[in-house]
Image (cartoon, rainbow, N blue to C red; front, side, top):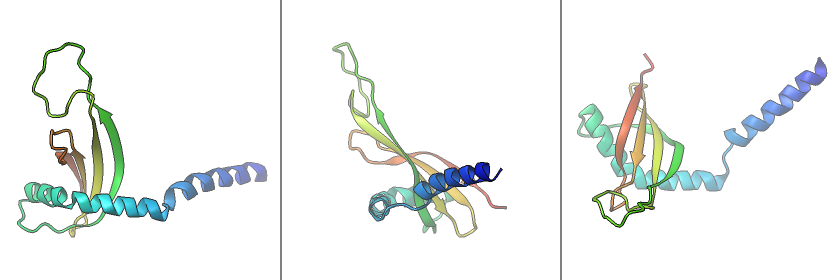
Length: 127
């Protein structure tokens, strides 16, 4: 019984220790990316909450997905946002609101200018 508990404890420690404590470099990269996404986060919150000056805090990136557009086999060109075979990203950002709500923003940059825009959002109410 003690051996099983020890094995379970070691297993849980490896899972939580690797994810719970991010390296300083990872934290800096996340902060730099959040700084670059700040304007799209603010404009998204303005649209969602219809506020002139939206307030939020504790922003963090929870998911980054790298996507590649499909390469076309035929020679015909069609108007698309991202070029065929181009890489774009979907980034999920979670922020805290003063009313204790958490807002999950899914941002995407598949446009020709590679600017991020709000794809979708979810509001998780604490009430």
